[in-house]
Image 1 (cartoon, rainbow, N blue to C red):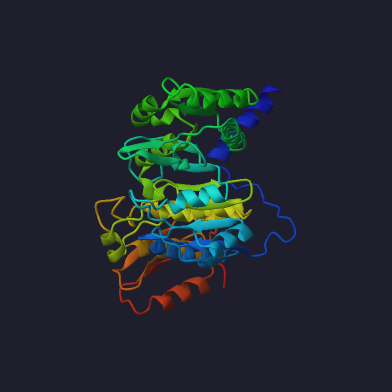
Image 2: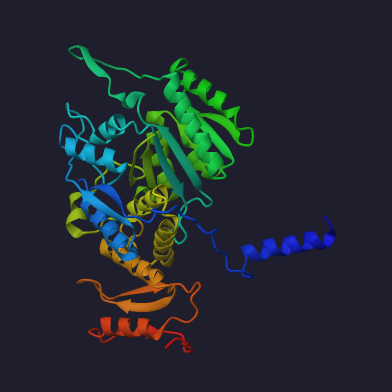
Length: 430
């Protein structure tokens, strides 16, 4: 290759990452019929669940996303997931759910675990990453925790041998260990990830965790382009707190994955902003990435101060799963813009208390702007009975918004004396 060609390629790469060219994703070419609305089972859940799922419904409506929800009331105190709910999930293949409260002690099993086992959702995926505008102790955190969902300590195989003696079984099988290892490496390969780390305690549980490691090593040989390493779970927790940026994709047995995912989420910004989901061969359930059984305190519910970011980002994952990538990109971009601006925070993200409806309504507003091919405007609006809030979307691609857009906004905000609209002076569209 000539020196001239190399120089040209370097300039192209520099411009693609800089301001020389406007970056644009590769066009998604759907199959005929892919735009037909898809049914999704919606379980609002307990505690803050109805609040955050309502925010998702508002945003989906604002984007005109091609999905509709079949809503069912399920609560953590139930002994079983109702049959009609399971039938709906099996029919629709996809479910979005809020948190389901898990009773502590007693004989009632977790409905979250029931869903995973009955639908064979063998892989739990939690993505923990830094969000621009959200200060954290560590930068460059982008960790994906992939956890085996159907066996191990969470199998719930417990019994009382004699009064005062309880036996709990940890079951590890070759089939399930290979299956989760294959999924982790396949995910890393398809998402251009460079390293997979297996988390274990094989130094003590030599047979059970040893079988898990053996399965991971066999699968790793089929992916020579991906670096594979292993780490003991206690050392893993220490390394996560000290140097989280060293991890990429982590594959774990059931219990370790729960602990590691929550630790990574806390490092990257909190469980309230980390998306996740559970997937099997035929079905998928999307929910808050970490602490799915945490439904919030009663005070948060009463004051309407829940944080919907985790479920909004999980909804973006769901849209990609349903082959609606442009809607997923639009939603994810809108959420990140609201957080980056820093004026709309719930208590878990900032010391100031901001209303949950600020996040939901303002994300919906930005999605409406994008849906009209307008990617920029500065608007002051009154939301419900809350104080006036400045919702600002950054200029991206539409240089000259039509005047009709601003006239509509002006009429909408005419009741407030201090509402103003900041527009560009040169409006070429009538």
